[in-house]
Amino acid sequence: MQRCAALARHSELPGGLTRVFLSPEGRAAGDAVLGWMREAGMQARLDAIGNAVGRYEGTRPGLPCLMLGSHLDTVRDAGKYDGMLGVVSAIDCVHALNSRQQRLPFAIEVVGFGDEEGVRFGTTLLGSRAIAGTLDAKVLDTNDVGGTSIASALRSFGLDPDELAQVKRKKGDILAYAELHIEQGPVLEAEGLPVGVVTAINGFSRLRVVLRGEAGHAGTVPMGLRHDALAAAAECILAVEKIGREHPELVATVGRIEAKPGAINVIPGEVQFTVDVRAPEDRLREQAVAGVQEQIGKITHQRRIESKVESLQDFGSSACAP
Image (tube, rainbow, N blue to C red; front, top):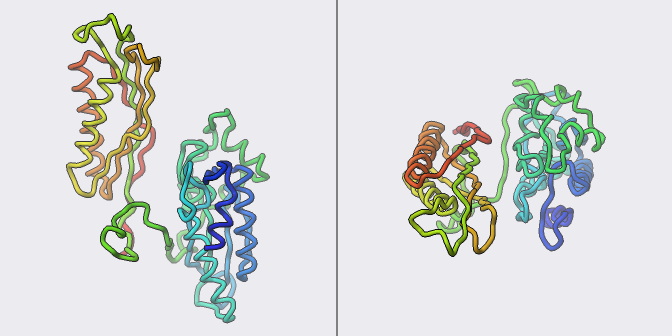
């Protein structure tokens, strides 16, 4: 708990917790974790994508490993156990083994992933994708809002993006991956249960929706002659919510909305909003996304509003080992 609190102090948000990939706060958190790994008896290093990696050898060097860990970056205004709990608890497990001078018939590696949340560059899971070997090198050209690319940020951080291939693990190198994570929803608390076992990692689809109507004076344009992009967006958002309620394992969220020109006395002429759809089965998610697109098309056609739906990200679901 003290270590989670210590990591939470590495934040760009005064009075809260925000720590993004390849930031000064990210470096401070990574350095702290590497130090704790070494204290626990591990060899520790920062890999080429910025993951903090510690290794505790088995009964002989070079054995395949059980990988434990979680992420060290955060969403904006995050909770101090999200990600960090899985890293510090894994370190403590290794410390317990090392204090007894106990070695297992496999190695243990603890990983604090540098990027999971995707806050800075808008692309998630960079750390774990690099280890899995699924990170497309083209992703390194992605820029943050300041125009800095991932490749440039890695170099400024003292890392070499040309060495990313070395981060990839061979299938036989990792026996299994396990992660302790605080529940980010209310289910266990509502059920009065202390712990649950994850059966699947949700797949997700993220969309950007742009609606274009016609801006006009709020006092002089009659209701019947309006092409109000925000009113259309409101109806679309309710349609997204309705689709999300159609199956107990499906969730659908509109998390961000922007209306232009954004004046109190002007009918909005353009609205942008995001849609996030998640489910543990890809077919269910894909059907929901198609339903969202269909409903947006119907609503905007009826309201005589132009619409554009752009896919931002698609990640498939992953069933966990029984």
